[in-house]
Length: 224
Ligand code: NJP
Image: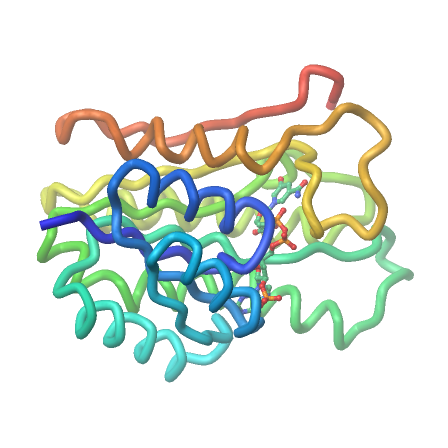
């Protein structure tokens, strides 16, 4: 039976690159995001399952897990990766955009942990969360950075919650990655989405007694 890899934020960037590498490694991949056209194209390419899911909606998250189980019978890896940023400066950005960012990055991540928990316990699986370098150090005027500190905290909280269950938990903490996350490409030689996907695959390919808790990766040219 092939193992099953569920990814939120799978329509572009890090999520899509991880989906391709997971499929290459033999996983059946469940792709979740809001952009159905992109998800369907990727699902066709890698013979995966596309499920429209707004991570801020509990019902969507439950449906996502149910569809994954209906199609493949189990979930071995859940990668809570959906998220986005905003303008820095507490007097910048739009407050509705702020609200949506907090709900997506923090509440959405918690909902994915909750929705996938029974299936991961059943499979003795692996949970991964996309935090950030910005989840380890504060960026000036960045509410985004605060949301990623929350994700970092959730990773450790989930690891402790899963204690004695055999489920592993990994935080992925990228520096700048050249993805649609940015309106304009980073000015330095940033990481590629595939660089982060390789780190994800490294964590999930360790033997069951090895739990890689955090992977922080900066571009060589990123000083802070
Ligand atoms: O960006 P992008 P990345 N419900 O824009 C989805 C973190 N990160 O791959 O719904 C469901 O290509 C969106 O899909 P759609 C970053 O914070 C990045 O770089 O169709 N899905 C898309 O698939 C984020 O957590 C950098 O619009 C929702 C995906 O999220 C993760 O990496 C640095 C959604 C975003 O893909 C992936 O971002 C860093 C919702 N409500 C951390 N809202 C970086 N790029 O430099 C959004 O430290 N999505």
